[in-house]
Structures are given as C-alpha cells and as structure tokens.
Image (cartoon, rainbow, N blue to C red; front, top):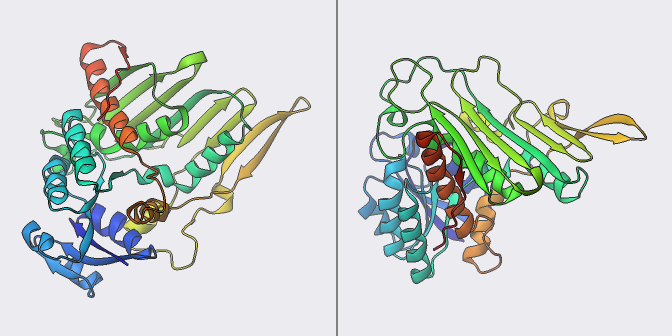
Length: 350
C-alpha cells in the first residue's frame, strides 16, 4: 500500500484527484493539505488533515504527493517534495516555464523519484477509443486532428486566480496542456507551430481563447482550440484519415459527473451513454458506413500507472520527454502568437 498526500482541495484536488486516488487499488489517500476550511475532513474523515507543507512532509509514511494548486506554485511545491525524497504528481500545467520543468525533471532523476504530470485527458474514454482505432490502422494515414475545449462563460469569474495576470494564468495554460498532450500522443512532436492566443471577453486582462495549428510531415495537421464564448460547443474530436473519419460531438461525461460528486461505484468508470459514443465512418464498396466506437478508458489508469512505476512494475505512461514537449509547445505557442508568425519546432530535453 502506497500512502498518498494531496496538496490542495479546490476543484482539482476535491473532484479530479482525491476520488481517483481513492479508487485505485494499492493507493491510500492518507493525508490532505487544506489550508482553510473543513470540506476535506467531511469528505475523507479517515485522512489526516494538515494545514502546512511542513506538516505534510513530516508524515514519514507518505510516499507519493499529488499537487493540485494554482499554477505558479507547482514548481516550488514539487521541488520541496522531491527534495524531501517523495514521488510527485503535479497537475497540469507541469510548471510555468520550460526551464522550471527541466530543473524538476533533473532533480527527480538525481533523487531517483517518480515525477509526472496529470494529463488525465489522455485517459478520457473517447480519446482512448480513438487511439485504439488509429493504432489499428482503421483510418490509415491521419491527415487532420481537431480537438476543441469550448465553454460559455461570457462574464469573467470575479476573484479567480486563473483570470488574474501572472505566470501560468489564463486559458492557454489551463486548457491547452490537455489538447497539446492529446495531439502529440497521437501524432508526435510537430515540425512547426502557428498560434493565436487572445482575449475575447471585455474587461479581462488574461487570455481566454486560443487556436493552435500544428504542422506535421506528409500533410498532416492538428488544430487545437478553446474559447469561453461558444454558446453551442463545436465538436469535441474530429479526425480525418485516408480511409475514413472519426467524429465525437460531446465531452466524455466523467468530468461533469465528478464535479457533481457522482463518483462511479462499479468496476468501470466509463459513464458515456452508447448513443453518445464517437462515430467512425469508413468507405466500403463505395458506400459510407458509420458505426459507433465504444468508449474504453478511465482516469484511474493514470494513477494505477504511477503506482506501478513506483513499484518498478511498469514504465511511466506520461514520460519526462512528453512533459517537456507540452511545456515547449506552450512557450512556442506564445512566441508564435506574439510575433504573428509560424515558429519551427525546437527540441528540448532534460
């Protein structure tokens, strides 16, 4: 049994980390750092509640620490935990700069500690179904991949740290890590990036929309986009291949379920209804044949892999190089948007 300490009990810690950790065999949510309030104690009465990082690090049994706090705190908190000889999972974005990411990954290597970032959207059931279809060669050569994260929030949220100027604030660092990780999981690192990062809502001083265009060899392209001003959300996933296409209109419903406190109780965390599965369309004998593709994954796969990596039973699914690639993509995206030009890919490694 691996004892886990969770830092942060806002939306991310409460809805997207704690219930997932609790549901993975071999992991025990042993302690929660909630600086104020008693919601953690109410929801997890068997976990020890602490108020400071020093208190958490003083618990010798804690081996793994999950960090779900404002973006600018990820680097200093992860560094402290690594220096205290703990394994660490950081919510996305991993850090606010590539330089910080490189330093943390080098430190983890020196300490021989598992360190990863919570790219949970890679484990969405619909995206996993898409990955399996592409890996099986059903679609042939991928020509275009589109992934979209739309919301409708015309009025900024007063007091929200993500909407205050500062390192790692704004929608780009909030949502783009998910979409960049998905694109590079499917297609690898691009040859170049062209991006438009902007503010669409009046009175806001941070970015709240983006379009990122990734260029790949042999004509392949990826379009990643998000806005807070889409009253009618655009399709969630669209993939065009030589042999057909994949289309998914709505989000995997696991996130809204967890937001509402609806934690799956059965052996499967796939909560998608069959009528909402993604659609695969292939041309057979000159006719377009469309069929539903059952969803196949859930977020517990991430933490189960972290457990197995700590126990030396598996390699990390979210690797150090993949972490750096997402961080590099964020920096190149900002560079492209500010200079209004296409930026060639620049490799970075730890």
